Structures are given as C-alpha cells and as structure tokens.
Image 1 (cartoon, rainbow, N blue to C red):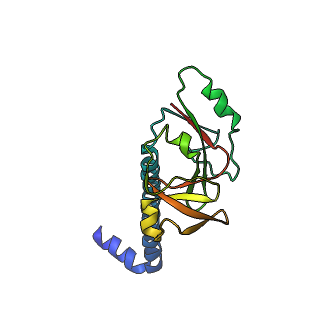
Image 2: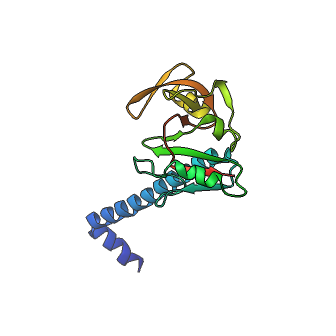
Image 3: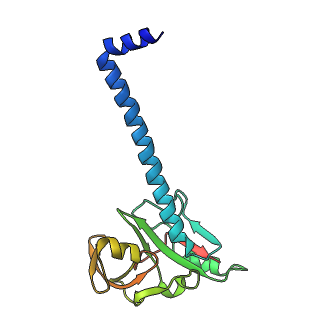
Length: 178
C-alpha cells in the first residue's frame, strides 16, 4: 500500500504540489478569518465595556451595533420617545460608522451618564470640529492633544485622550438607554 501512494505522488508531481498548495491556502484563509473576527470582537468588547447601559438599540440590518451604511439610520426623535417610557433613566443617541476605523459620534455630556468614560489627557469635545482619541490610537499613530486627524475627508483637532475612540458628529445610529 505504501508503495502505491509513494509512486502515485512521485508520478503526478504537479497534481501533488497543486493539492498541497490548495490545502495550505485553505488553512491560511481560515486562520486569517478567525484572527480578524477574534480581533474585531475583542475590540468591540473593549469599547462596549465602558458602556453601563442596559439596553442598546440599533436599526434593522446592523450587526453588533455596527452599521456599514454611510447614512445614519435611526431618527433622533426616537430618543425622546424612549426617554418618555417608564423605567428609562437616560437615553443617548450615538452616531457609529466604520470606514477603515470605527468612528463614534456622541454628545459628551449625555454619554457620560451611561458610561464610565473619563478624559485621561486634555479636555472633552466641545465643538463639531474637535475629536477625542483613545490611548491605543495615540500610541500607534503617534498622535497627541493639539494634533489634527482627518476623518471623512475633514480635519479634526484632537482635544483629549480617552479610553475609546470618539469623534463628534451629528445624528444617531443607535440609542443606548438604562
């Protein structure tokens, strides 16, 4: 039996190499996919760990609070309707978008009511052309308070460093309530 296998491999070298390459490529793709998904879930868990809200609402078609659509999909007036329900302490609209990096648009004052967010360096965002970054982005991209970063083809001035990446923008994608 061993002789048949060895002679078959030696006689059909091209098929043997192509089969080994195909199996290798399949294994590499599976390992890469698992690594990417694992990294995404870990990052999402790290970002959501600071959120103390009990309920997170998002538009239909979103996955784990991430909407890949370039338009913000939940009307802002829904936050007011949810705020009027019994047992709701706070409602915070969050604009969340992914284009190469995850960008959250928040109202800082209301977001601090449903999260453990605090500023490590600098100050909170006060206007629409300011941004806060996390310490990981600060280290990896060598950014600091006072630098400019471009998001959505528009410059933002970094005014603070925080535990999660936050950029001031307009409109909600999901509403967090507790």
